[in-house]
Length: 319
Image (cartoon, rainbow, N blue to C red; front, side):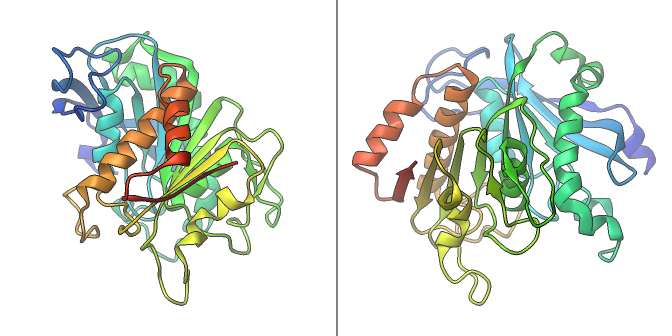
C-alpha cells in the first residue's frame, strides 16, 4: 500500500443539486426546494482485517448536517471501485443518507494480477466487505469524526450495480445453493439492485430465503450482450425468482449503466440519458426512504407505476 493510501483521509465539502420534483434533503441544510445541499466526503477510510488479507478502503459520503442518519452500503460493479457511481452516492447523501462505498478485491484500482486466487472468491468476500463495514461503524466514525453520534445503526440498507447487485441480493436473503452458503445479514433492511447479473451455475444461481427482505431491481431494456444474455429480462432474474416483497422497473432505451450511474469520469456510459437517471434517482430514493422509515412516497409511486408509466419506464412489476 502506498504512503498516499496510508495518509489521513481528506475531508471534501461538495454541493449536490437535487431534482426540483424531489425537494430538499431530510437532515441536511437547504434554503428551499431544489437548493444545493452540503455534503461531506471522507476518502479513504481504511479498515484492517478484511477478507482476502487486504485493507478495506471505503469512501464515505454524508449530509453535512442532521442526526439519526440511515446507512446505504453500496457495492460497485466488477472491477470498479469506491470512487465510481458518485451521481447516485452524492444524491443519496444529499437526501439524508450516510453512503459507504467499499472497494472490493477484484477492483482494478488495487492492482492485483487477474489470476490472483483471491479474485475468484470475490463473490464471497464482497459480501464480507459489506458486513465488515457494518461491523466497524465505530471505526468509521473515528476516521470520519464529523459523523460521530449521527449514524442510525438500526436503519441500514444495501445497494449495488451489476456484480454489486448480486452482493446486495446475498446480504438481504439470497442464498447460493450451488455453493452451499448463506451470507445474509439481518441488519440490512432492504436492497436496491441495479442491473444485477442473470442466473448462472455457481454463486449467481440464487435462491431466496423465506425471510428475505424487500428489494427493488432497476434494469435497462437495451442491456443485451448476444451470446451471453440475449434478452434484457436476464437482469430481472432475481426479481423473477422472488416470492413476494420485490419490484422491478425496466428502463427503455438504456444499457447496463442505466443512463449515467457511473458518472462523467467514465467512458463506459456512451449514451447518457437524463430522463432515465431522473427515474433511477426518483425510484431509488422513494424505495430507500420507505424502508429507512423517513418517507412515504414509495407506496403511492408503486401504485402509480403499476397503473400508468412514463415512457422511459418500459415495464414495472411487483410481487
